[in-house]
Length: 151
Picture 1 (tube, rainbow, N blue to C red):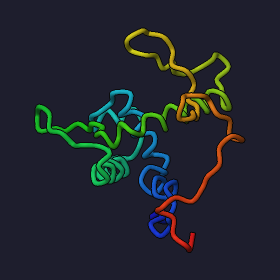
Picture 2: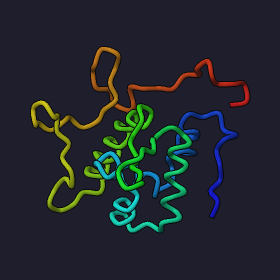
Picture 3: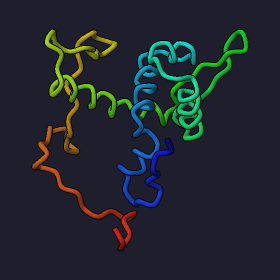
Picture 4: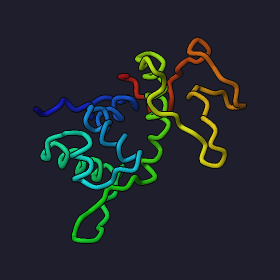
């Protein structure tokens, strides 16, 4: 099934969803963030059809989110690019949201820690320029230079 494209929308969120908004794509990226990089390992871990996985990986490579690198035996692995690594806060935010609003009875499913200290990171939050945590009621959207008259 071909998904509807959001190319016509002048909206950063719509443009992001056009690239990573499909659920298999998000789960593939989750696994790559967690260190699973080979096609067969991704396929086995996710239980996804090979043709769907191949299609999603191809798109992520085309979009510059993943890089396909050769490894021994004529195989390849998929590695996050700088563009892909920039999605880290998105995935952490979604995971923190899930643990808060769709919790497991035994607690957090994954605990993200700072490598240097081993201490858990703080939940993702919106922050002011000076670092203060802001609530949703303290933030508003204003037109930017990329917004055209139609939107």
